[in-house]
Image (tube, rainbow, N blue to C red; front, side):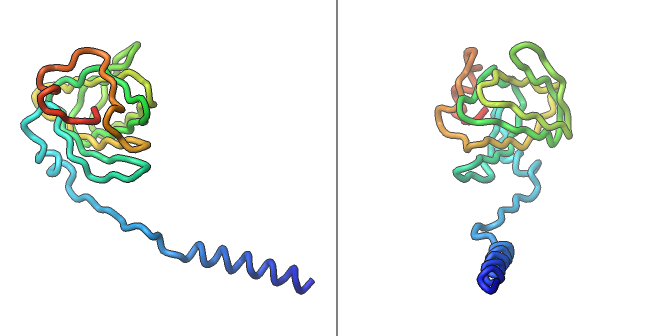
Length: 154
């Protein structure tokens, strides 16, 4: 009985220590994402990388022109629209999206985007696992500005 009580005490102590141990990584706070997106002005697709780890890549993006149909062969992409609106193009249909919408695009899913009007669309884009060069496969010719900008990820 004494050994059973001792074993239970060790398990409880272990759970307490693990539960009370602070995380070993630093917390990242990125203030004012719309302001940060304006730092990428001048291109139809401006990308500002906010964070990257082995598990994910977090970008704030500013879209003022059409994003050609493409897939990501390794990453799932989650996009939260901070401001603006546009049309999400998928293989079989189009879907209107606007400020406040969340879009989850599984890997190998053809998708593209066209913003409405002159206003830029600002969005938070998260790739999981992290975006790596070569993950994006274009399904149609890139607009001239995309070839020139060299922006990865969308």
